[in-house]
Picture 1 (tube, rainbow, N blue to C red):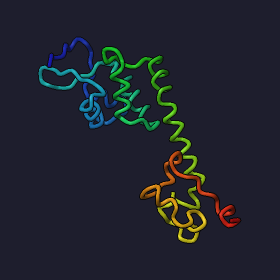
Picture 2: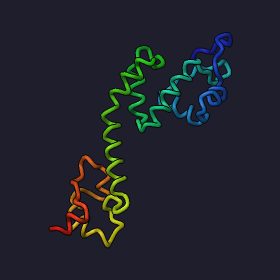
Picture 3: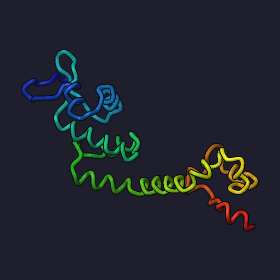
Length: 165
């Protein structure tokens, strides 16, 4: 690896951590997984260009909205010459993630609406189970809380409509 030119005003890992609000261990993890790149000094110490601050902000913001590190890495790797994302890049990349986020939001809204009466039929409600999931028909959908995947799970009628049958 080429050594670092000290005149370039690079950030040490501790400085990058302090400026970005991301722990040193997380920065090492990001580097290990190809999300950020460090140059090395003659003494093998990590040094980061200042534009890595924006790259780290991009990673953290993407993570906060639930994007996986694999998807983040894919987006960053698609940038020419591994450059830092611009505002236009963010608009384009986030538009590509919008449908996935919309599906997650719908799943969370479904879970929230059902949370008081049922945990997703895995099953914690012995008194309501026959009303919510008669004959354990959701068991065919798989193990665990199958209602969590709102798009794949069949809609269970509410207790009032189940009693009306």
